[in-house]
Amino acid sequence: MNRDIFIQINVVLHDAFRDMFRGSGGREQVSQDSILEPLCFPEQPADGTSAPSPQGPGSELLVCLFCPESVPLLQKDLLLKHLLLEHKLVIADVKLIADLPKYMLYWRGRFLEQPVTDFCSVIKTNSTGPVEKQEDYFLLCDVLPEDRILRERLQQKRLEEVLEQQQAERDDSSFHHVCMFCSDEFTGNRSSLLNHMAREHSFSIGLPDNIVYCKQFLETLQNKLDNLQCLYCEKTFRDKTTLKDHMRKKAHRRINASNHEYDRFYVINYLELGKTWEEVQSEDDRELVDDEDDDWSDWQAHPVSAVCLFCDHQSETMDQIYTHMKEAHGFDLHKLRTELNLRFYQQVKLVNFIRRQIHQSRCYGCQEKFESREDTVRHIVADGHVMKLPDVSTWNQPQYYFPTYENDALLCTLSDSDEDEGGQVNHSEDVPVIAEDISNLRALKQTSVLNQLLKNRSSSS
View: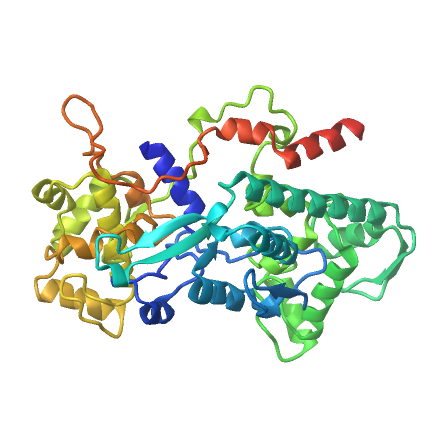
């Protein structure tokens, strides 16, 4: 498998497979250590947000794809765990699905028509172990064209609904609301109130044309003030006077941009899946409608500092992080790679294995369990287990292809020792292959239903 394709597939899968597997692959151990949300290093905390919902969180039911089990939408994690433990199925990038209930109903119908193996990639755990400890897990993701089209169609419908609502609010002349900071009443267009709060009270939530579901937005802010909560730092105060003095003196007359409760009120959040309004706003808006000369060949992700395997130390370069791990903890990854003749994919699995063991407060050398990560690292260093790896069959398993941390820069810079002196790649080790070709990102972007919708709306306005 091409190394770049491998990294792309990891991007697709990192939300799906986390610490749901243990070395033995047993069901009982899966239930003890399963983590359904992606782990993330502190410098880029995982926001855990879902696709913006026009009406906010609701009580709509999510129905299992295989059985009558159902839960309210707010409790979606319970159903995802049920799918994993009972049916061994994982849905990738759930947070990017615009309408999860409709998505689930669609695939429930399709699985009644055809077997799940016709649609899902199959991941076999402990492939080199005893047959009785091997299990097949199924991954449903947008690498499958039918799934990608469904997700785009749901996103397109959601975007159309939001744009229609935005236009209706632009044209609405029956708006009536009292200012949150004074007794002035405003009737007519919503812009009069928003401009008043920005001009007279130095409180701006953005341009009126950037906001949707404005009444709900204002009600949300008013409820926070009624509960004596600062809109920016979100601390609670003993009375309204103290709250007002605090917001004025601390210049906290603005909303907390890190509070994703507000995401659904900004149109920009509906334009690109997986991006917050802060990320999209920092880009050139012309890219949304002008793709004639787009070239994604030199696309690069935002740089992320590499994090030590044993502590929170971060370094700007890979040489620095390798030096830190060797000098501070006695761990020499280069030496292990040479001594064990580790190929690229084996290094990936080793790093993910160590990350996962330490996250679970377990020594990777002797498998002893501890109360905390700090106790684990202290034991590893004190007992000389830093360079003591278990048998290769323990960590050289398919489940460790998937990153323990979604922004682990260490994985992207491992030495590619798969290549021999002649530059030929050694394919002796089997790696997971997904049949669908996902390498042509430019073509996917140019043919995106969402992108075409934006172009059409732009040309007609």
